[in-house]
Image (cartoon, rainbow, N blue to C red; front, side, top):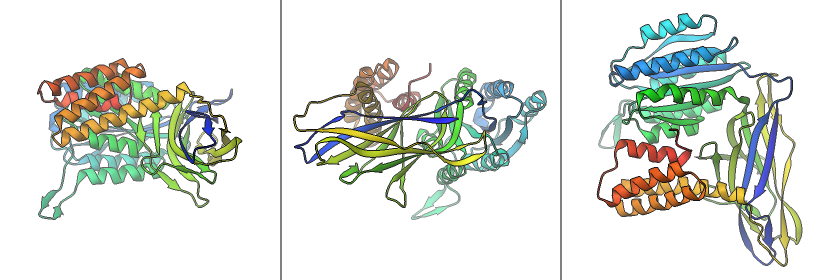
Length: 426
């Protein structure tokens, strides 16, 4: 398995006379399978909410979705299942797939709904189970909940008891360091989109929305298909800039495909930057956008950056592999002529749609309904520019409701968040 690494600037030409020029650098990364490469074994943990609110049809459809996943697991794959309500329990310990029907039978008998929603307890047990089967495998968790989790009681300036949200984020960070990926599923309309998005983003995974119980099977299947295509794990983008070239100070790096995520970065000992990408899928592009500023450079074709991917290949049990270094060039011109790249412009607009929606949500939380409606309309227009008609419809509908003096429902808020990050799955 190899890494494919491509780069492009939104405008490859730079004006020699300008003391500072801003550019967007699009970096495309994916895994390429060789003729003899096989699919990697999966090490999958399902962390499932069985609180009282999941009683009845919700828990039945979740069991149906889980059974569908188990039927798609192959010899060599591993499965574990954790259920949580007021506390968490391992109902299927980490094990190789040998008797799928027995596993499904145990899940049916043990996954009954009652009690509260201690998400962090479930996440902690899930990480523990995943760690038992990581060798030579792609380790992923599916965390599903219909609730907010349990918050600590605040008395004056002290927090009394455990804060589920803080624990969840710390556990997601721990999972990422252990090369485990956490995907989150919001079930129904009462889950906390900020919490589940943060867990997925920090854990290198995907946020999915199951608005109606009957969508559970489809959403589980869609995400399962994605993780089956993973070829390399624990990938980092290594970005080195030449003197007189720098990253923007605020939110300089973001992923725009397959989902939009603000990416944190670390500074390496040599002054370069490392951005965690996590798992790389075969032939499915991961696109990262870096916002950079170029100071004055000599005339002619100039290298402004160097890119490399550090990754693990579980199939051959090798870690810390490095792709070839890819230089990024700009043409510094005395007689400047713009050379716009339409594909990079598409990525810029994708990120703009996400950030415009974030601004709208922030204004709504502040009570500025007019400002929120305006920003949602702007985001809807941006979505149309990139051909995302589904997002445009959702965003414009929410804007229109705010302008009419209506409140946005929980479903409206959830859909708005999802379409800001990716294409809405109908």
